Image (tube, rainbow, N blue to C red; front, side, top):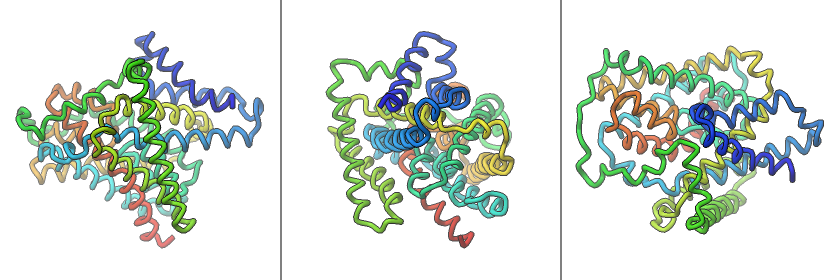
Amino acid sequence: MLLTLIYILTPILLIFLCQRFSLLEKLGVVVLSFACGITIASTVDLPQLFSFELVKSVQSNVSEISIALALPLLVFSMDVKSAFTMAGDTLKGMFLALFSVIVISIIGALLFNDELASVWQIAGMSVGAYTGGGPNMAAIKTAINGDESIFITMVSYDIIFSGLYLIFVMSIGQRLFGLFLRPYENKPLNTADDDLSHMDHMADETANGYKKLIERAKLSQTFLSLLCSGLVVGLSLVIASIVPEGMKSTVTIIAITSLGLACSFIPKIRGLANSFQLGMYLILVFCFTAGSMTDIKILMALDYSLAAYITFVLIGSLVLQAILCKLNKIDTDTFLITSSAAILSVPFIPAISGALKNREVLLPGFAAAIIGYALGNYLGIIVAHISKWLLMI
């Protein structure tokens, strides 16, 4: 019980510290959650304090339950209909980004088959990570019964390589691809379908955004959001119970994603306050727990084959999408915001928009990231099984 509470409540302390200290706020709560977990894994012998079986059981349960509950909460408040009716170039650019990640991940699985064990799992989880984000990667790991050690290693490497991608996009990305793609042309939003201001609640990536969770006037709606998410997960487990044992995990994740999206079309559920923030808090719980599961040897002894695969996916998908955007006459800023929406997801869209000095791509960027969240689980599971079939495993 004590260990479970530590995993659930530690992110509250990290949020409080970020609210008090600007330096920590610049690092971000997500990064700090991972870093704090990794620090504990490398400095505290948890099995000695509790027991090896208890620690592993709590870590596994907390990480899986937090992700299962977070996935519906993240999509409840998303207006999927508006996301799919946004400006044509952004929608087209996002689908090109998703297509590029899928193609390069599968090619990578074929190229690295002799270098990496269970490369089909790596391909599926990579698609989840780079079309939706960390929550999708974790969900796909559960769906395909992915190897726990491979997943933890990928989480660690994802932090490093996604950080390098972010620095590249925010520094020279616009100038570099501007030599190849046409410049952005101002086109102010002027239709009801283009008004994505209802997604502004995702724009606050600061620690202060979590203050909404303790506003007394909204506590009942926050609790109701959690209850709805629990019902989605429970119903998904019931659905999965009627399929063969080997399909239960996959069906569970697909059902959670599909039912969560279905609920977002119900106005009363979509209007519930704080569902997105509560989902993000559960993601912090997952990040801290996943970090504490990290074997420090992973960071000390780089797996060059896995690092090469992730690098291949990131660079390869970026280049392929750029070529496809060139063929489809999509501008530089739209290319970069949609690529970032796929690879980095919602929390980083404001930072990318600011680096591009183009606020017009902010809301379309949110909508593009929503599509990634919505489709990431499906795409990752499909790619994992396609890769497995191609490799005849």
